[in-house]
Amino acid sequence: MLATSTDQNPWLIDRVLIDKLQATTQPLEQSLQQLTAETQRQQDQALLQDQQRQMAQQQPGFSR
Image 1 (cartoon, rainbow, N blue to C red):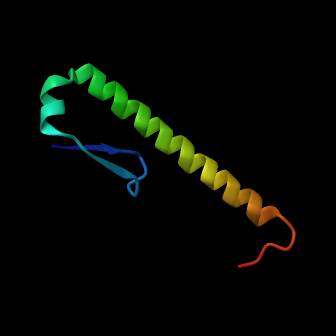
Image 2 (cartoon, helix red, strand yellow):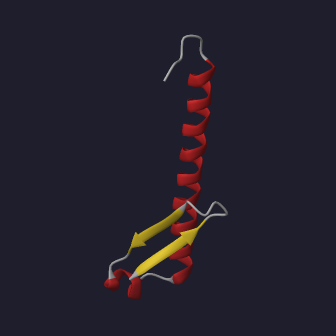
């Protein structure tokens, strides 16, 4: 089974492989809560990485 979640950013598409046995035994509500939590974690991580990248670019002597 393959679950997908899309963000408003078309480049952010998350895919999660789910065991078929788990999919049949785990309540849908619990699965949706886990998916929501993981999506939020990934968005938070991307935001943090963007902030760190911006801070690094603002430091004197930064060059690429």
